[in-house]
Image (tube, rainbow, N blue to C red):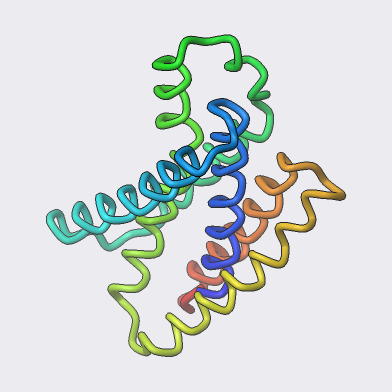
Length: 165
């Protein structure tokens, strides 16, 4: 859960910077991004609750695929698009890893035997992820996708060994 928190915080940061690049860096844009993140978490939890999901393998694979695609896809391709086209690209591409990460967390947390410890580990991971945002100064903001990918890969390996990430 530590790694899930770390990876998720980096995804949040990268989403905010990507949306700011495409739509401008305003309080409104940041508010919309945060609302979109919370909405995707809520939607993922609703889907998990409605259609009981047990396996995290597919969401992890979708996280990996979306992070790799976003790492190699320059946002400059979308700057000249219309506002609605940029919004569609943002919702489909930039928000995808967050949506899939919400599935991983929701499924993993629903099977938790020590929710207090797992939530604490997740929050501590988010704090470390928040501090790791400074890596963007050395690696660039796109490098946050690589660090997030590593965090989710470690979580996946631990999860597949029967432990909780």
